Image (cartoon, rainbow, N blue to C red; front, side, top):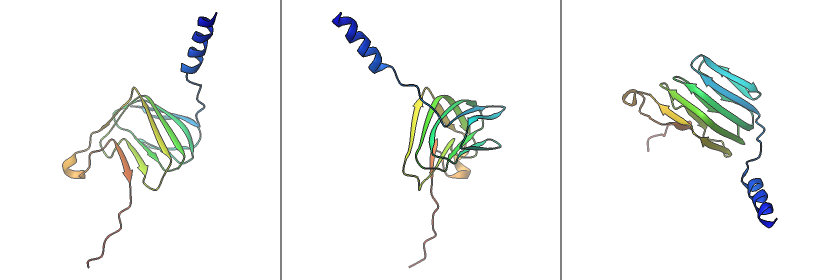
Length: 134
């Protein structure tokens, strides 16, 4: 009896709760599909513009995800995302509450480092002000 209760308790504690997502973003070589709200699609780029929790999955040889809103949780699950123009994921540097959880996922930056000067799978985008000469 006690053993059965402990087993039941263990299963309850170890079973993750069902997550409710603001949107699910699915990348494929044919484009990007979104179920939910808070995401704009333009060509190969999905832009998150609303706080919330987002599930991102799929496979794309050329895709990009941009986070422009604070208080965002990205769950990358079974995602394989390549990008040759920039990092597969770009986060605005002013954002303070962006959490990325990766489950069986890969990000690959295929940029030509000699021409772009960068090679990153997650880029924190920051505007640089020019410095005056002293």
